[in-house]
Length: 190
Image (cartoon, rainbow, N blue to C red; front, side, top):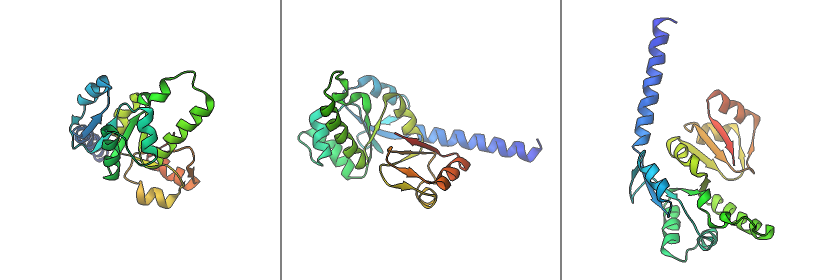
């Protein structure tokens, strides 16, 4: 390796740490009953009522149904809906969704609840596993709930993202996959 290559490599590593450090200063808002998750996130992020995004650690069946209908029936649900309407990025913790705690739920009822989840995901609320939330908050990620991810879209809308998450319904063109590979963009279907 020549001297220029070594200097360039060092620059890239330093920039990576600078970007990572700036992200850790991210301001987030957390609501819900999961105090352990709140404590864990407070070690890496600044917790505030005016955070850049909202992490919802728990949600009841009644709140989920109301959100899927674009309405609210209590202060907790009103907070989520108003933040959504104001364009704030919202993450809902999968393990905190009340209906998921039941093991013997009838299949037809499970299908209904999954439809409610799909509706709120279409509104832009991301359902995330508890263990993945820190990574999602740290990494610059985008979410697509429907349609096609083609080369034009990935270049124009998602080029600055390092992770593009999408629902299972989203179709990806081969050129978009190739562009993602070349630019080290992760494509995740959920």
